[in-house]
Structure formats: C-alpha cells, structure tokens
Length: 318
Ligand code: GUN
View 1 (cartoon, rainbow, N blue to C red):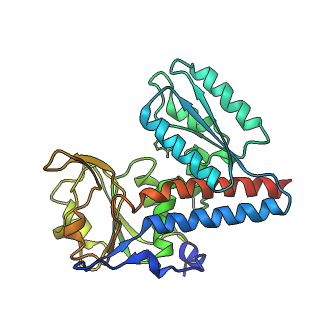
View 2: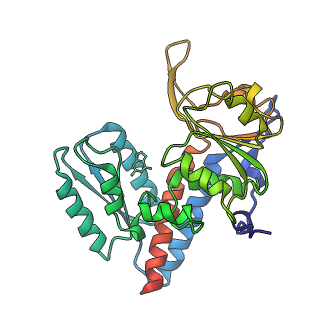
View 3: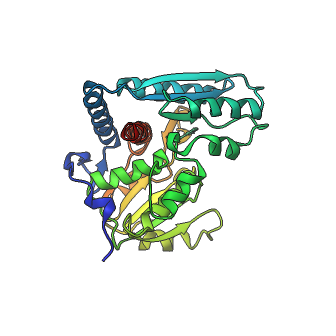
C-alpha cells in the first residue's frame, strides 16, 4: 500500500476547528483558528531557533506600481511576517520599471545571503512577463511556490515549497482529520496557482491518494452536478458566486470553498461570498468552509510556513 505521507505526518488533530452551529447539519471549518494555530507554531519555532543563536529569517516583498489591492495584500503579509518574528522588507518599484531592471533586482535578492524568502506581488504591469519573473526567483527562496522547479517538485511527488492557498487547503484537511486516501475528490476549477496544484497533490501517490475528477470552464454544465455529486470532497475555486448548490452535493461530503467574490446584497451593500451556496449546502454536507473565515486566513499562514521552511533549509546548510 502507498505511504500515507499527507495525513500520517499530522500528529495533532484539532477537533475544535470544526464548529457546530444551531440549525446546521454541517460543521463549519474554522479557517481563522487553523491559520492562527499555524502562525503560532511558526512563531514558536522561529523563537526557539533565534534563542539558540540564529539570526531571524528575512522575507522580502517586491511590489510594482500603485495597485491598491496589491498594496493591501503586501501590507497584510508583512504585518503577519513581523508578528511571526520574521524580518520583512518591501521594495516598491515604479510602474514603468523594465523587465530587465526587475530581473536585475531579483538577481541581487537571490544572491543576498540575508534574504531567505522573496515574493514578487502579482499582477505585474502588462509589459512584464509574469512567468519570466516568477521563474527568476531562486527556487530555494520561492515562498510563493510559483517557480517552475517547485511546480515540478510537487508534480513529480516531491513537494517542497507549495503555493500557499493549495497548501492551506491541505493543512485544513490534515488538521480536521479529513483523509482523502481512496476517496473521491471533485476539483472545480483548474487555475495554475490553485486548482492545478490541488488536484495534483490530492491524487498523488503518498500525498492525497484520492480519485480526482477535474471540472473546469469547458465541462458541460449538465456534467458538473454529476461529478460533484459523486464526490466525498468538493473543492471549488472558480470565482463564480453560487455555482455549487445543495442539490449538487452528496450528503455527508466535505466542501471547501476557495472562491472570494464581492457581490451587492439586496440593500446594495457589498458582501463577500464564495463559490458555494453556504446556507443550502450546510443542510447536507458533513463540513464546509465559510467565506470569509475559511481558506482565506490559511494563505498568509502558509506563506509564513514556507518562509520558515526556506530559512531552516538555509540554516541546515551553514
Ligand atoms: N497576487 C494575488 N495573490 C498572490 C500571491 O499569492 N502571490 C503573489 N506573489 N501575488 C499575488
């Protein structure tokens, strides 16, 4: 039988991450609490290593231009890094930086021994090729897990620095003791940074070991419910609010909603919702992640975890 790496490495099962709500059949998966636990563990491990005489880890953010969402994401990540005991720096470049200049900056950061992890915030201006930039980040410092070498690692069964959101979903499954071994997972969405890494990890030998059905934009709409209804786990990352409804879920399935959509409610107020009808599905599923407060908080937590991993690897070589 295949080694059950993904779940056997988890010694801590925190039942308190599954919250019962009045009138709901499904347990609500508390991603905020799971993210906080990961962040606390990262902080404690850093404290121990720093107390033993090592310098603190350093994470560098590179941001190009004045995109408001990117500013807010980077400031959130850098605050979380500081709280975990990670030294952070943010390098901001003008919108008109050339690709060559950005590559030169990344090269300097790759060579800088004081920098353990690096992240170039996306999206980049249209004159810069995103793939060239993410592949220029040295794989050992690639805390986003976007470099083609790190993609190759998880695709060939040796995961190292994983993209943060997929890693966050895996962490949720582990910490809630939801073993996918031999089960059926339906992955709805196949984006390069979320759907693809997840469906790869979830079917891999020794990682998820599940039967994975992939649904995407070209799946005929009448086939989608057939696929979701067969699944013990339905994982959704499409950016389409309310795509997945109660009638599409097998009773007792686990539903992980990675969607983040801003919609107007009937009073014209902006509301954050996922890709799933939370209320309806809560009547039939075994467990479901809310939006917000489900997968979202895991992304930053796993970025910090990746920084810790990159730093420790460097320390082990010194
Ligand atoms: N922009 C939106 N999400 C991300 C992310 O996870 N990493 C980077 N580098 N940019 C992003």
